[in-house]
Length: 152
Image (cartoon, rainbow, N blue to C red; front, side):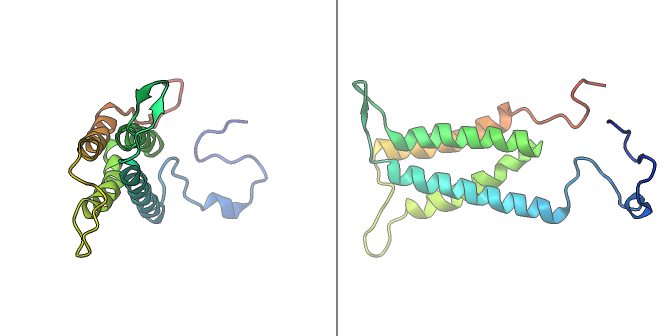
């Protein structure tokens, strides 16, 4: 049974009529929570991809560097998903910020001499392709239309 917005069937409790109904408008707390989760998603992609940079398995005789693959495909998929779910291309900035906040310390030398992202080509490809993937996702993502699916 489909009802126009704001109308209730007969017999509905009067208390429900006082509840404001804004379809598609989450509360500010829900938005902040969503953006916080998206920052964590970006950081997880960066952390996993950075530690996979040295891994170069052979698949059907072809060498596949896993770090750059995660940087490109993982970030692109996450970015397109974020645009589709949130309906905003600007929301891609949240996981991109988390990715950046995680990658920068992993590329810096610690006092102990530890370094996760070295000066190799795979690490550079991971950084460049990962950053490029967020930009491509923001530019190419299709935001969900707020109107009815049939275009009315």
